[in-house]
Image (cartoon, rainbow, N blue to C red; front, side, top):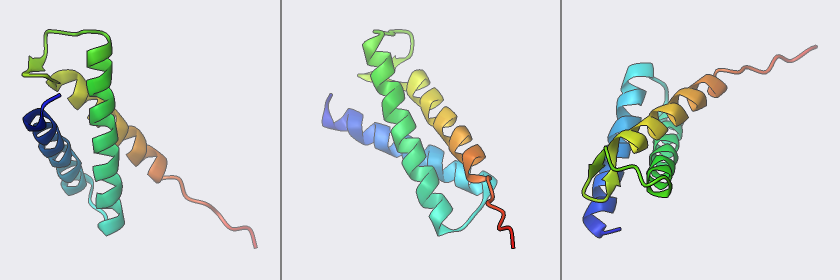
Length: 90
């Protein structure tokens, strides 16, 4: 994978995480969580696209649709899991 492909992937995944943060809100810890989840999901989606040799969504060497889907799934599941609150019984 070339450097421009990696750079484009980082830009897109960071944009997805930042836009998700703007939509759902939160503090600095949340934006960091969303960025990390978006990066992991995006590159996992890219690996899945490479593994299954999907060719309908390629921009250069980047599987845009599958990687974006991976990012969105990770963001949604991570957001859902972050809503869990622990109750203290006194």
